[in-house]
Image (tube, rainbow, N blue to C red):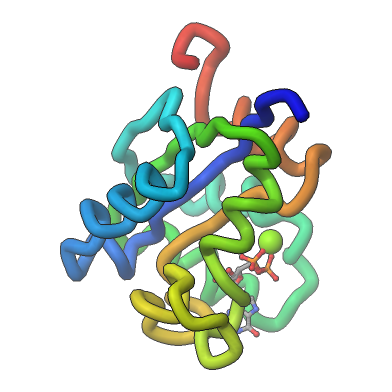
Length: 138
Ligand code: IDP
Ligand code: MG
């Protein structure tokens, strides 16, 4: 299988507690190459656009407010099967249901403040990578 790229985010709760280094270490240890990375703070409008698929969900306002509560780290991750492998390393959305050894199991605070984001499909990755990075950056 050829190399694949996906978007990874380290969310505000993780930066707040200084966990970004430990999370990046796990990403590298699993064989991902970080082909682009930056630390930024989203505007509310940007967070709402990024999470537009969840606009009708009851947690949308809280989620987008949380996502702009502090800085995030955005990364383009590359390896074979990167999209699925990054989702596996992240663990389930609800950290109480996440497998042992996953980032969410070990770092997440709760279902909302769950430390990381990953594209869930090739279609999502094709939208999400260019949302954060221009072609010059990776
Ligand atoms: P994912 O991040 O595992 O793909 P999604 O269902 O796409 O999960 O939800 C996006 C984000 O919205 C989650 O990572 C989490 O931060 C938040 N979220 C999802 N479901 C809930 C919920 O029921 N309560 C609060 N926040 C939620
Ligand atoms: Mg999702």
